[in-house]
Length: 71
Image (cartoon, rainbow, N blue to C red; front, side, top):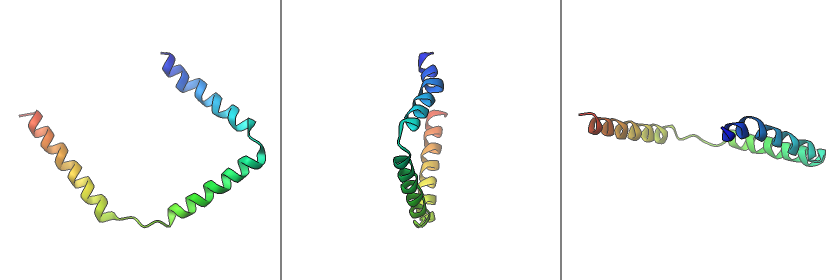
């Protein structure tokens, strides 16, 4: 029960406190860095065939495990 209380109440309050204690210049610099990082991430190529192959392998593994567990 205390773990849920921590996650639901204390953690957001701690984050809010940390954000209020940060100097505005540091917070602005961090936001600029985050925006730069997001722009760079948007330009990265996506390898859809590799993603499809990985999903196919996972589906095959789940299917084989299901077949093995449920005769």
